[in-house]
Length: 509
Image (cartoon, rainbow, N blue to C red; front, side, top):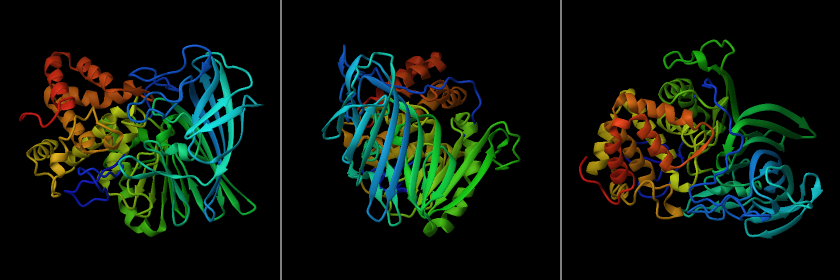
């Protein structure tokens, strides 16, 4: 998720004072893909103790009803049709999952929309609704370890959700279509699922829209077909994905496609000839109203990707690109997997932020929303590193300005950095506030100063490699850093106590 920095003239808005904008490359290394990664630790409830109903939430500290216990989704197959004039969505969602407990019932998260039918392994199932909870009772009980398929047919007008911090997500109608954004709870507004970052899955999303419109999602575009005035766009994302990073964007877009040979990509040369080893597909969809302004910053994408791979290690996905909507369709940028969404033409530093999230947040995902600083601290520090290495301010000078309190022009913005520890937002309304971003980045700078440049660079590359496609928490990160730099364990623990978990502004470092 991107944020506005009031000290700079960028597209990000509402940074340190509390309102948010959401900001956010190859494939080498032999790493096992975790097709489904259900959080079962860190205080989360994985399921029922014996045969019965799965839990109706995983116990997230800020969104306790999000997610569900008793099963692990490995694949979502979504077939959607949208009529912009009536704002009517018709959907069929098929979830492939594995039972993690013996189950006579299980829950799905779905807000609004009318459920027309539910089947489990082809047999009709009984269904009950209670708010966002859709309770499914299959005809035959499920046994632990059993794979099963649930198909939900539904329709209606999807809702726009107002978050605890006042921003909007879910299904956002636009002048020429719609935009679906999911962080932290919005995905339940347009498809049923296990909507918590602790459960990741692969996705196939097919979207049918009136001819002349384009439907964009993450991953790779496998096909388009037009029948009777309606066009279907079929998108495939093979790598595990948290549901909050799934998106659909519908509208009149100017589309640019290319391919990048990531093995031969350099920051100076940009796109070079491919040799077929590690090709990345690039798909950019840009609203015509902002196409001219977006052309130059999007042309920097190959160079930014090259820098990011050098800094963070091989890009974890097979596709990249951007969705650039007109300013006002959404009030923030978001790190939707492989294809970030931008509210108007992004500047290069916002692209850096969103691309960094592909490693920190999308590939390596927080186990609970309390761990958001692991996303935003890294993405914010990526901005500092980019500036430092491209003729801008050094990371140390940004750190010093934040500490002195003269970084922002906006009154009170600097003080907001110290409102709470990065690893302990006090409420759901605070998970996207300044301490998570800026103080989270300050934690990483203190790690860099403590362990030295070599070990810090090892952390930047090793952390997203070791945990690729998995879910993590703060304790896992601090333990990882201490393993990388064991000689500095004592000093690191002082960093954790003071900068990561400590209340208020620390003493001068």
